[in-house]
Amino acid sequence: TARTLLVPASMGSLEPSAAITAVMLGAQLGRTANLFSKFYRLMSGARISSTAATVIVNQVRANPSGYGNPWQPLGGQAIKHIFSLIFEQTTSAMKDTKGNQFGIEIKVSIKKNKVSSPGKTANYKFVFGQGIIPEYEAFDLGLEKGIIKKSGGWFTLPEVETKIQGELNVVAFLQDNPDYTQELIKTLNVSKN
Image (cartoon, rainbow, N blue to C red; front, side):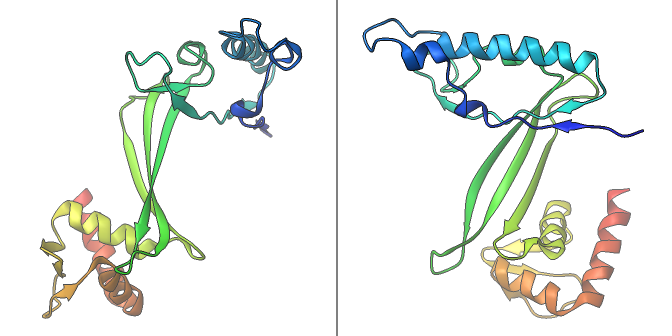
């Protein structure tokens, strides 16, 4: 069976017509959240009568009240109740020794899940021009499992006599030695089970 994936524009780009046409002095509080709430109700009704899955991209903004969570989603509190899955994605820059950014490290957390258990996280690194590199994944998992040892800025790989300085040099070593990397991945898979 064919499935449809519906991805509307970013929620931050929606603006209520009342806010656009209203006089600047008029009260505008809650208009955007009200618009989102109506939009979510319409989307929920449309989804029930079809097999389409809906992915909605939403940003967070600084909470204007100063109380509670410092970040507030644009749709207000209606988001918590309408969606079945809520993922939160945060990014941070990956920089080399000279301070040049060469990629981003992405952390995805499951905040709400009606199908399975929430609270799981996934980390991955995206290198500009190359995408997600399997050697980086093997390096991160090896560090997490204790197969790759770290001492300061130096790393010790199993069955490699010399220590390697720097994360980028370890990844370069893994890229230059694909047979060794495959053995490391097999070891990681065995330790994972």
